[in-house]
Length: 100
Image: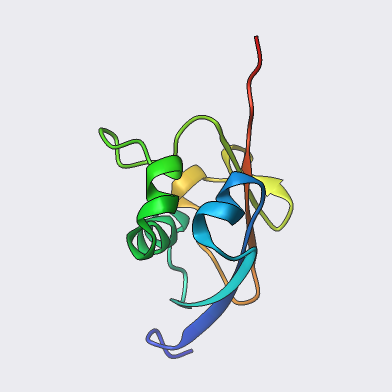
């Protein structure tokens, strides 16, 4: 396989993430075996509204009030932000709302 070949993944945004990004779903071209953390960084740089509610400004990682699924599996059960993505993967961003 060609290491420079490109894959496509689908990103879905639910709740406040959908509103912040302005779209509920996008298709994104990625490098083969690109890591989830790199994809999150890439999309957060395209939308300041999404970045504000998704990314911890000090750690530069997703905030703890975010559930991220890759193909229906929570990323902490995979390799977290180091999860390697492949063609046709689906990444879903779900906001977690805490009450008191």
